[in-house]
Length: 226
Image (cartoon, rainbow, N blue to C red; front, side, top):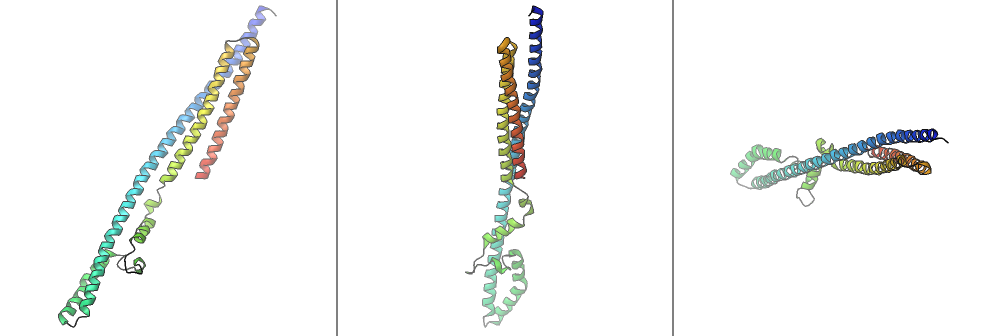
């Protein structure tokens, strides 16, 4: 084989390797971008989870505060009822008149302040005490804004994004190893060049397959999560 033929063979081999390396470089850049995008999505989901966790706690605090405020008004109402009933049972006409006046004007206002604990028997335990925990649970169930919050779901989505990002990192490493072997093929000759090219292409194809598998797997996981 003449020198010109040798040079032509080397040039053809270098051109093939250069073309493959260009494709691998593009794939590596896309994989790195995707990994970065997944990290950004994971961060957004984590921030959303933190914000919603704070909002949930705020709703819990407000509902407990409201439950105890209503319970305080209901207790005053119940005490006033007991006082009025005692005056009504008295033989003193003055006390009876006072009781009638309080029942007409005072008890109705106190009942309004303590509703529904003061008027709904379902909030009264068998021992006569008020079931504040049940009132709190009802307030939570009635809160449409609270029902719309899902901090745990946001954290689960963040974890899915992080897991997918880790999968992309592995794929990116495989593509980087492919570039290494292809670069090695550029500076070698003969069988060494061919071997490096084969290893580089094999790593490239394996890296692409890995990334495709990661994308399909975690897309399915997110679909199930939704």
